[in-house]
Length: 164
Image 1 (tube, helix red, strand yellow):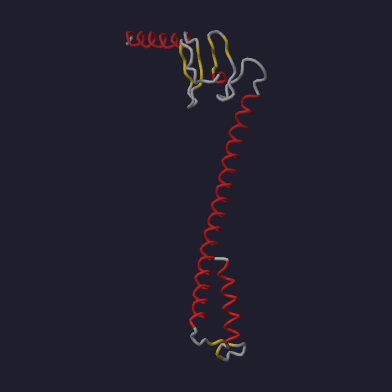
Image 2 (image 1 turned 180 degrees about the horizontal axis):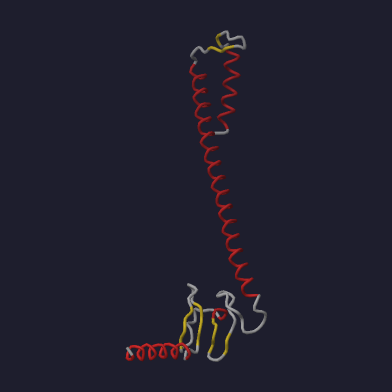
């Protein structure tokens, strides 16, 4: 039992010494603290280095207290950072939904225009075929279309097809 305690104390001391001997402390891109006796890689920005040999720098990204300045600034900045990121996300999400809606509306309008063009072309072909056509007046009575009415309808159909 005493031997196990001695080993436990020895390992605890060993890990504490390793931590204390770290001359460099920085936060990696995943937000994890890295301890080392060698300088951090060049890809780590200076604002992410917490300890550089014997100097200790503040780091807003970790939310830790700064060794210089007002300690209440850092948690507020972190809270604002999370809130602003959430706000930016919601804004991007709303913009994307608006873009999707506009795209769907444009697609629907294009489909409607194509359908109307097909109907207008079909009607123009029918008018040009010379087949006798009937019309219905407001009283519901059918009558045959005259040559003048056919000519007017044909010119209207050609105008409609000009936009297609």
